[in-house]
Structure formats: C-alpha cells, structure tokens
Amino acid sequence: MAGFADILGALVQSGMSKSSTKRLTNAFGAGGGGSLSDIVGGLARMVGGAGGQSQAGGLGGMLGDVLGNLSNNKAALGGLGALGGALLGGGRSSAKGAIGGGALAMLASLAFSALKSAGQAPAQPPKALLEAQTPEQEKELDEEANLLVKAMINAAKADGAIDQAELQKIIGKFEEDGLSQEDKDFFMVESARPLDISGLIAAAAGRPELAAQIYAASLLAIEVDTAAEEQYMQKLASGLQLAPATVSYIETTLAK
Image (cartoon, rainbow, N blue to C red; front, side):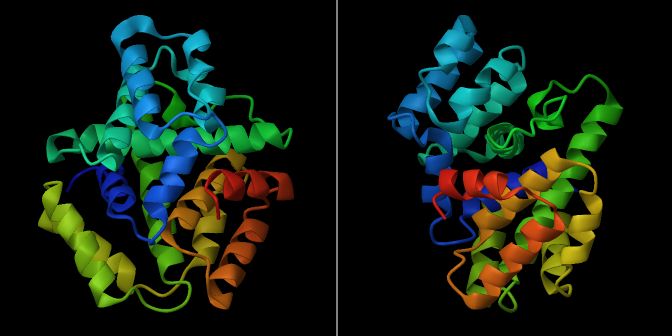
C-alpha cells in the first residue's frame, strides 16, 4: 500500500467537490495578486536555490506568509510546486509522492497561517513544514496524512453516502496516479463506514495545528451547500475547539 500522503494527493487532485480546484487555487494565491502559474514558478525558483524570505513575500496568500519557514525544506517546496503543477494540468503519476507531500505542506501552511492570524500560532510549525529527519518522523507525517484522508472522506458523507459517480471518479484518479488495489480498497472501505466525527476530534485533541488541518481538508471535500454539510462543519469546528478567527481565515482563504 502506498503512503497515506499519496492517497491524500490523489484525493486533492481528484476535486472531491465541484469547487475544489478553485479553492486550492485560492489557497495558493489568495490576496497576493499572482496567478497560480506565477506562484508555481516562484516555488520552482526557491527550490532551485534562489529562495529566501524576500522571494516568499512576492508569492502572496497564505503561502507567502509561511514560505520563510520552508526555505530549508526543499522536499516541501518541491511538493508544493508539484501540486501546483498538477492543478495547472501538468501533474504526472511519477510525481505522486511529491504531490502528496505538497498537499500535506499546503494544508499545514494554511493551518499555521490561520492559527497565527488568530493569535494562536503553535510554538513549533506543523510537522509537514519541517524536513523529516528520522523514520519515526516520516511515520508521524503519514499518520497525519491518514487522518486528513479520513477527514475528507468523512466530510463527503456529511449529507449521505458518496455517490457512485464520485467514487468512480476518485478511483480513476487513483489508477492514473498508479496507486495500488490496496489503496483503492482502503478508500472504498472508509467510504462505506458510518460517519465518525468524534474520532477525528479525539485524534486532534490538544493539537490545534492538526485540528486546523482537519478542518481545511474537510472543507476542500465538500461544497457546504446543504444544511447537513453546514451543520457538519459547524459541529467539526466546535469539536476541534477552533477559534472563530481561525475558522474564518480558513474559509476566507479557501473561498467557502
């Protein structure tokens, strides 16, 4: 079975909601005035060695606020560039590992910026913004990716089961990205499980940076255009104990 980051990358690319791609584009460039292609180009320059806080300031949006923390994390920068390239239509299955890491870094960046804007920045940046140094740290990242995958699947079931057309679209993306039958089986089993908001809340207890990532990942998976989805997101935010300012930042950045 592939790492959960690869599954997360496939889910993010599949566009689980109709506006997922637009929301991700907003996350990359909201408030910065630059197009996604400009931002991807900036990331590529940083990975190539021209990085630094001064360049980050020109990228805009929530990424521009945190890229200084990534200046020494070439893997995360490369992953963000790979994810951006995939959103522009240039992603390839050979980049799936990088794209998964980019999805993790993007959600971690958004969470970090949201908490910072609410005056609740954690003492340490989220794990996905730091270079994993040990197998244990890599395992921790994969466990976080597992939670974010479950958060997206859970949100998609907020107003009932995921419809078959959507399931097949996602499975098609898994195949395109070269994920295994085991990965597909994992997704189908999780999709069929009962809604479990309490499990997500318990997993993030005492970890506001993870709670904010769970909320952002959940928002990416749905339109929030039904009463059931609205209630789900409200209950999730309350259970995760996210400050209203944190929730507002995430929703504004992703253009809920």
